[in-house]
Image (cartoon, rainbow, N blue to C red; front, side, top):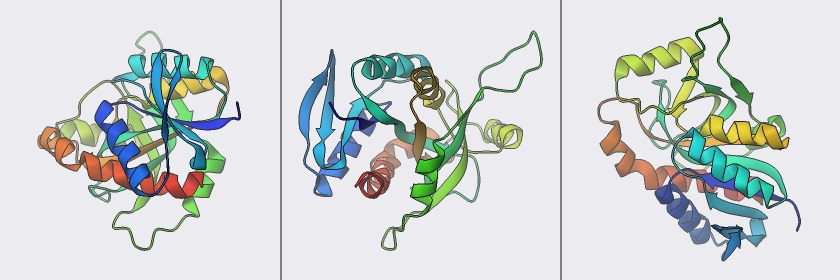
Length: 224
């Protein structure tokens, strides 16, 4: 089997919206299985789309299972995120130059939070893409990863100040750890659904489809 790009979404809804958006853009797909997991193959893009599950641990387990049974040139975690910077709008995309595991609390000795750098060549390639007809912006920077819903403005400001993160989501560090273990390049791509505040639960549901469609626009160009 040729090496492919493996794209893993945390949630079922993210998986559905992303697959629908890629199909709407004219890319054919077919159902397939990797071991016990159902996946979608997009032959024209040379990519496999799978669902990883919610939270760092579940995401890492599913991702490792897929990596053990397939040949991949790049792993991408694609999903929703909350914005931590006022410069980032709903629907914008954040490409992680690095993913920092913000909920890794080591108390015995002072250590920096675990940080995983995004695949530099992929970042450079996406920077070169243009989307003149789209109504979203692409940002490059740190994404904070942790198993914690951020629905408090002060907590969001704390993460932004401590880590310089542009956005916050759950699963990225789990995917990054699986990728590092397998020595496969890694990239986290997140579509902004909310502002990591009290309105986040409703905003997430209202904006998820649009965020995943915007990710699909990037992937369609990047993988073509």
